[in-house]
Image 1 (cartoon, rainbow, N blue to C red):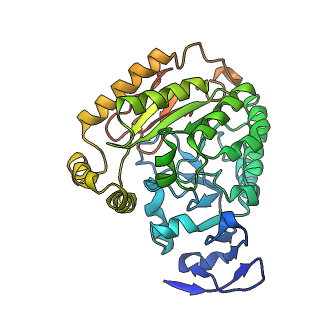
Image 2 (cartoon, rainbow, N blue to C red):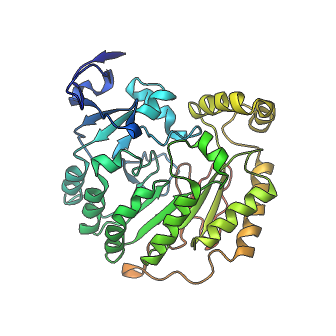
Length: 367
């Protein structure tokens, strides 16, 4: 269902389509006449709540998330969150990349909820659905208010991102780390820039993300790297894995966690369509490796994890004890690891957290 309503462009003209599921929230559709946002519509809504409770049946080790945005201009072909756009009567392909929901009141709502007597100061995870430091954050500036609210409430939190825009808020993260446990992880699955342009077209270049990791380290924050996704037959050769791990080590990462690409409904169709167009010879091998499921064969995952573990140990990633944070917890980005997405529990290894089948373990995210 679609219909045009409340659409506002920089030129004052209306006409952008609005998802029917957002109508009851009084969404305003807005476009910006700038090259970086060409073809993108932002749906500004006033969220009823900021804290999202993770369902009790989930295997995640945290129970609360904050998501300022839905949809993501990073446009990663493989993004597992694509299917969530269908809940908005939007598609998991181009709509996910170009129709972005913005919760313009997220910081105010979060402050109110963190101040409520019922709030118990539990860990809050961010970046577990879509990236809060995607390009639209440069215009909407929601994250300073979010981080400030968490800091002032002394609520422990973690964040996973590909967005170098996080550097804008580095001082806020450092301040928060003085008051509570803070985890930061940067996602870099490979350093091949030709492949990056095709499969992650809206993200900062991989080496720019690693430069951010180094810059955050200079501010006293220890940052882990999620080496994900490792793309079968594209970024999994010994040379490609070694180049990525060496670059991660050069950035001073506190830990590295390899995750082989997984293909859930929504992401699976979108990624395989891209593969068929750009690497048609790999479609057959992918179908044999994944079958009808979302995960690559266990033997393949174990082989890749073992290779990365050996490379990380050789490069010295994770050497040195993590410094304690407030109340004895690990400091920002220190090498505690929790599962984020389909986690089965805490997997703590300073150098590497090796995920089991159906488990996604991240460095630097305290549970």
